[in-house]
Image (cartoon, rainbow, N blue to C red; front, side, top):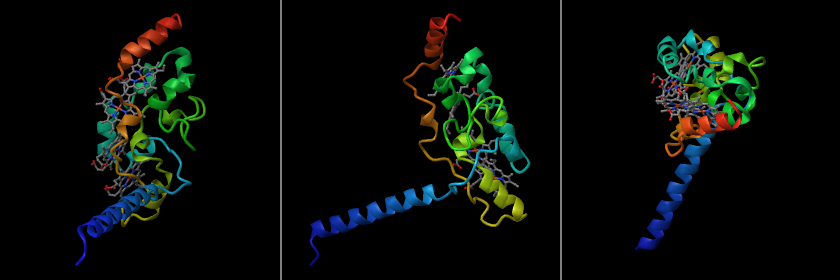
Length: 161
Ligand code: HEC
Ligand code: HEC
Ligand code: HEC
Ligand code: HEC
């Protein structure tokens, strides 16, 4: 007879493998060479999603930054797309298409997905090289315990503006 303990060990080992498998599958979803291309380049194939996104503040939240804030890393990591990541936002001059919280802030860099879609009109396995949104995507930028408006008002007052 197999002991209860042995069953527990086997089952936890299986859960562990399944979990690792899921993580690996997620990590492998987007090739390492993928770059951020900007939300406009997604529009031709995803008109509907682009329209709904465009109507949110995600599309325009770069414009709430004033003066030198557009160069402040402490602002850019949430008010741009891919800041600090390879191929992500660098500056208004160098990467104007990556202002604001674009598609790729949530779905990951899209150059390889676009390439695959363009090279094959029917695009079999259409989800190629792009992410479904991971559950922790939003908390990169949203923390319900931080009052962003108050925090920003304080910083601006301290900076004399
Ligand atoms: C040349 C056309 C094309 C371009 C450009 C394109 N996509 Fe797609 N995308 C597709 C097709 C086709 C599918 C699969 C069919 C569908 O779900 O609409 C797809 C699917 C997706 C999915 C769903 C994935 C899934 O797991 O179901 C997401 C998310 C996505 N695209 C995001 C993007 C983003 C973000 C961009 C821009 C960076 C982009 N796409 C650019 C054609 C394109
Ligand atoms: C890269 C950073 C970033 C990510 C990731 C992000 N957000 Fe946001 N979000 C913002 C910023 C910045 C604002 C504030 C825009 C403003 O007020 O100017 C915002 C605003 C919003 C708003 C208000 C929209 C409006 O038009 O009034 C909602 C709702 C929201 N986010 C939900 C989400 C959800 C849900 C996710 C995950 C699926 C998410 N966000 C991921 C940065 C982000
Ligand atoms: C950790 C992510 C994060 C960082 C860093 C960040 N913001 Fe935000 N910001 C947000 C989110 C999310 C919101 C929306 C807050 C909400 O609705 O609760 C927001 C809202 C704002 C708003 C209010 C816009 C409106 O519609 O009233 C301004 C202004 C702003 N941020 C400016 C800044 C500035 C300036 C900095 C740098 C000092 C900064 N933010 C840094 C995530 C961030
Ligand atoms: C704030 C995060 C966020 C942004 C920004 C965002 N998406 Fe999504 N997107 C989601 C979530 C969440 C879903 C639904 C759950 C999932 O599929 O993981 C989704 C689903 C999709 C799908 C699958 C079909 C559907 O409508 O459910 C496509 C295609 C897509 N997004 C394309 C885009 C494109 C193109 C942009 C930019 C124009 C964009 N997304 C911007 C979070 C985002």
